[in-house]
Image 1 (cartoon, rainbow, N blue to C red):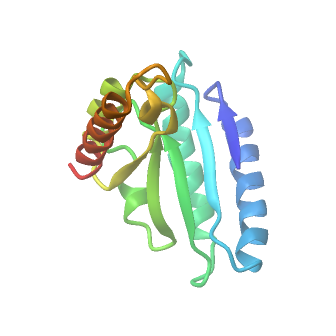
Image 2: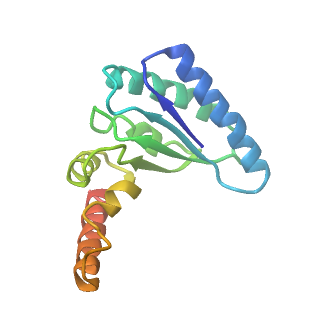
Length: 156
């Protein structure tokens, strides 16, 4: 479930997060793990402010979950390093994964490495540099290198 946040609007962010958690609870009731995905647009002039509001709002909704309700969070890489560290340690959060969000793979890896406890979910960055015109060995080498760089950024 992905929702996009373009502005640091507390009312709008609350509405998005509330909707995500409402649907997330239905997913939990079905025996599955919900992925809460409020993506902050990396090109927003209010990105840092929106991320601060998002963090507070997520904590409010996480704190309202019962002990048997867990979620994963899929978030844009924050402007401020380790902004989401508290979320990674929350007892209702199984894992926090980061969207590459339009950053190049190198930039996304650099930013991800600054965020302890957050791992990559970089589908766009994973395919960067790959082409159907490459030989099989070049394709495999590029993919192997990409996977290694994303892995290394995830464990820092």
